[in-house]
Image (cartoon, rainbow, N blue to C red; front, side, top):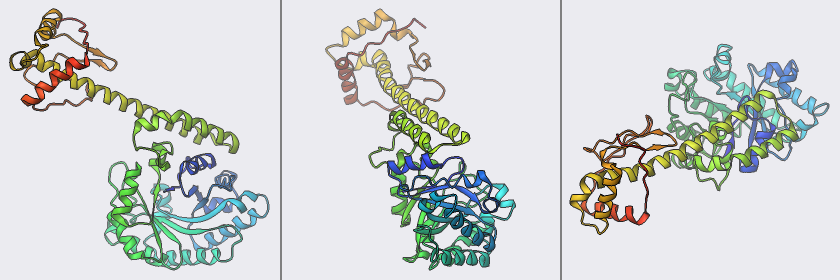
Length: 403
């Protein structure tokens, strides 16, 4: 799995963390070629390949073949002068045709370039020729793209034309199977387009799938369903604090939250070593807060479901069980029920709030707003098992008061 280029996220420290956890390749934040040619300090600082042992590529957003040519020449020039870490740490170049930002699209860049076949061909040719002469340790060149600018371009499959142009010129393409007008949070990635791209690419071009990979199981499924050569992870990496790259991770929020403290501590060590911009530091701090929150919510849901299981059975015991089940502990239980007035409607509290009085016509209890009710038919055999389990576990329910 490969770490995707993400603005305000993939700095040197985070890339190193993901590489240590198992990412096979990483990318810097997107670099605008126009700003790079102006030698803007905030732009050149994004090419922070300070750790040569972490395989890292630079993603460029270009507008023309001339701009691409000059940018590549500048990278080599400064690598030989004041940016020696570029000479050691730039292992790949990626062209951005996938960023859906309106500012980029309105400038005619990114996905807006996919419908300009002659321009794509020229860009791919320049990048291929440069790779043959560069002194930088570049191992791979490629492009990241979407299905097109809009639904019409997706229907016309302009991305497949770009794949055909890339064959024999580039080493790989990354396909995010949504068009640029779609919001990733509102529509599902259509992996069948990755499969189509791989069928067109054949063995002459590697295809890397991207989109809706939140767990290692998703990555395995993408590889199986599409036949792609690798998987690129973006939001899944930040959502799991890099755990998605770890083969030992079990894909659960609880496991992610459990290891969050150690992971955050390691990231702090790396930021102390390589430095970090304030916005990126704030982003990672918020990411770890969300990781812990999801783990807490997951643990709480498990607690609710366990509690709900017992409350469902106790409700039944208070109404049906006394008549229908012949159990050695039945008399003692009914006596305890009368002593506590449990069947008359007490309220039971938990750390999540108040539980309302149960309806005796159904087997489910009403939890807090977001909790779903568990209602299921209970067979005679299960009833016997429920009572046995109840007394074997010696569960104690403390009522807070009569309803």
